[in-house]
Length: 302
Image (tube, rainbow, N blue to C red; front, side):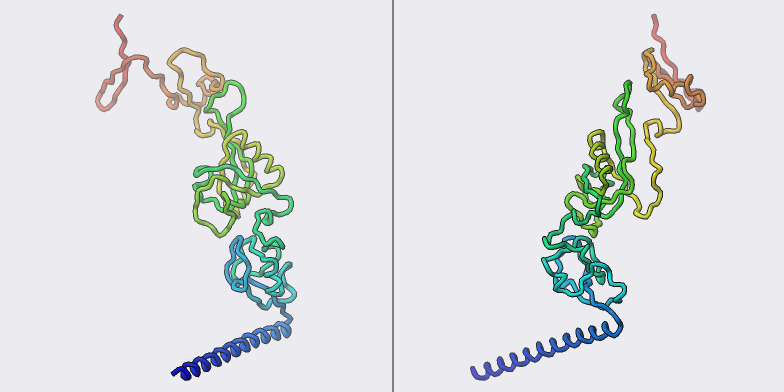
């Protein structure tokens, strides 16, 4: 019985070795045939992704493969062998889709780390601004989007109140590098964040730093293909309505200077029907005449 088991085990080992030999021969033959085709058609062999690679994904034998590529159109920075692409434990710095060439500019260098600074073009800075659920467009702003940055602050000058505010467009079509500590452009689900990291130049970073001290910043999500830029204007409360309204005080105090332009004497084009009537000072009664009602102030007896 024992001898029979040993024979079966020996046969299984022989068959396994034969299978491994045949598999190696087949794959080696496929590789050699592809190399011959590349030489005959003047093609080059470059490394492409065999599956989608997100930010920070390590390169491995499982997600890379060699393909034939026209020799006269090989992208700059392409790897010609898988060992060269795997050297120094490289990771993806930008999303790479299946079949896309793996370029040196899209993977890490000798440090093998995925850093945000590697994503910055020359002359650009990463600057983080505070946001919340509302100013961050409800969590729909994600890495890879473009946004306009709005600043709401008090109107400077004497005689203004806490309600006298203004909104300016600080920057337009700014690329978003990350939300909180997430910089993966493949993450598209809405998520609440407390900071947004934007790609700006030096002047843009200075504007954002000053804006944070002056008021409240808000983000406005923009279509990445929207060419309409440069039409921003400062918005103040009087731009929120088509008319000019002011509710007088019950006292006979002088009209504040900031509302002087809203009085009928200063703005004769406002129809009287648009002005708010003065409220009675004492008790009132309503008299109905058919379907019409009128409110009268009741005079106190003396």
